[in-house]
Image (cartoon, rainbow, N blue to C red; front, side):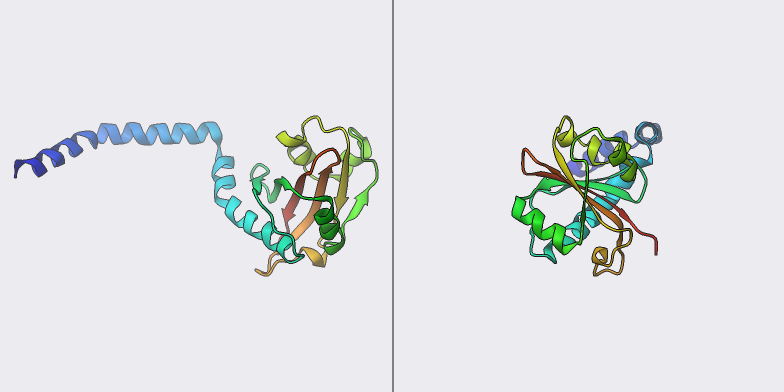
Length: 176
């Protein structure tokens, strides 16, 4: 019968106010190093993945191993995955995307057209060093970018690595 009191005493020893304050200090220190960006990305990633999957599923394309991240603390994001050329054709037609001319990097005109390009798909790890790409872009606030939830994407850009089946999309949620 003395055992439960011993466990309680042992637990209380670890939860002294000084230990609690030190723990809170370390948590705050970690957040100061990573900033709000980590929290923003972590909290918005599930909804983003759900919205992108929904958009593709509406055109008969199921996504596997979808890796998405928010761009800083903005409304913009990137998602990386693999698609066959046939699936890319379906999505390009279904979302009414237009090919942006100039498929070789770097090209100044392409950089000017792409919002948040310094932290978007062209900076993603899997697109580092890609020599030949195709870029497909939506119109701003295209009706094809509306979601069942009532929200929509402001823009949608699809980057296709022509040497592999890697794809990166860059999107931004629209206001209102």
